[in-house]
Image 1 (tube, protein in one colour):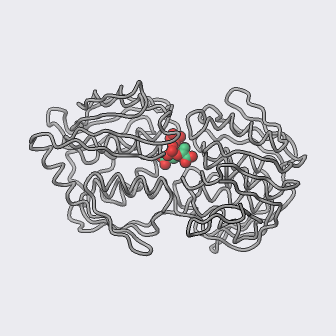
Image 2 (tube, helix red, strand yellow):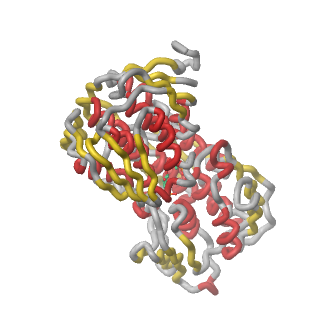
Image 3 (tube, helix red, strand yellow):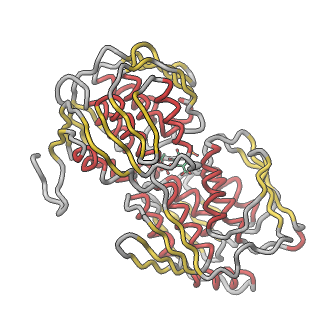
Length: 453
Ligand SMILES: O=C(O)C1=C[C@@H](OP(=O)(O)O)[C@@H](O)[C@H](O)C1
Ligand SMILES: C=C(OP(=O)(O)O)C(=O)O
C-alpha cells in the first residue's frame, strides 16, 4: 500500500496513541498475576494484538469493551500450581508472536513457566532477529530449548526454575524483561536459597527495565531490588505483595515512541498540542523532549499537553543508546536543523525491524539528505531542505513514520511504499496527522477499501 504525503502545515491538538511497550507488559503482568485485571486505554496495534493472542493461547480469557479490556487469568494460577506439583507434562501448544520483538522475548520465559511443550513462531522481520540468548540462558534454568540456529521457530519445554545467573544485556533489554516477570512468579526450588539474582553486564535500553518494574509493581507482582542495573535480586522470603488483591487495574500509558513523531512534526511544520504524554513516565523515549530543546524547537509543556510550533532549528548532539527507537524521528528532525547533528547509538539499530542505521541513510538519501554512519555515531547534514521522493518503509513502521513526518516540509510530494507498516505500533498514525491538517492521500478507509490509490 502506497501513501502520499504533500507539504503541509499542521494545526490543532491530538491525543498520543497507547504505548505498546506499556500495553504488552500489562498483558504479560495480567497473565502471570493469575487473577482478574482490568486494563484501561488498551492499544490496538499489531504488537498489542500479538500480546493479547499469546496470553489467550496461554489460558487467559479476554473480554473487550469500548475503552478497556478485562483479562481473567485465574487458569494460569492452576498452571503454576500444576507445575509445582510436578504433574504430567501438558499437551503441545503453538504461540505466534507476530512481528513483535518484545512479545517473543518477554513471553518465551513466561510460556516456559508451564510444563507444556510449546512452539514459538513469528512473522516478517521477527524470523530473522536474533534469539540465541534463549539457547544459552534457558537451559541453565531447566528449560529445554530447540531453535533454528538462534532464530525462530523455538520449541521450549519448562518448567523454568529461577537460579542465580549472569546474562549479557548488550543486545536487548527485552530478554531481561521476560526473565524478571518469570522470576517474580516462578515456583522456586528451596535448595536455591531465599535470594536469587540475575546479574546483567552491559545492559542497554535501561529505562525499558524501569517500565517493566513499574508495571510489575502496579500488578502486585514480586519486584526485585535493582542494584544499579547490574543485579536484580528477588527475596522470596518476603510474602508476595498483593496476593489478597482481587482485581488489578492498570491504565496503559500514552506512547512517547509514537508521540515523538507527532512532536517532531510539530517542530518542523506545525502549531500543535500533543496530549496524553506523561512527564512522570519511565518510558525511554520521553527523552525526545531533551533533543527538541537542544534543537531549539518551539516547545512548551503545561498541564494541557506539549505544544510545538515551527521555528528556526539548530543541529544538536544526542546519545540514543538507551532510547534507540528515537533514531527515526530524530533523523526527520535533524534534516531541518541547520548544521550537522550527531547521534550516538547506531550499533543498537542493527537488529530492529530493519537494520535501521542503513535504512535511514538509504531512504532519507532518496529525499536528498546526507546521513553518514561513523561506527556508533550517525551524522546528519541538515538545513538545506529535503525533496519529495518515492521512498520505501522497508516494512519498518518507524521508517514509514519518519519519512511521512519529514515529507511535511519537503519540496514536492513524497510517496511511501508499504506504508501500512505503521500498523505494528501506531495504526492511527496517518489518520492522526491528517486530522492535524497533513495532506495524506492513498491508503484504505475504515472498511478496508482502497482510497485514491
Ligand atoms: O521493552 C520494550 O518495550 C522495548 C525495548 C527496546 O528494545 P531493546 O531493549 O532491544 O533496545 C525498544 O527498541 C523496543 O521497541 C521496545
Ligand atoms: C524494535 C521495536 O519493537 P520490537 O523490538 O518490540 O519488535 C520497535 O517498536 O521499534
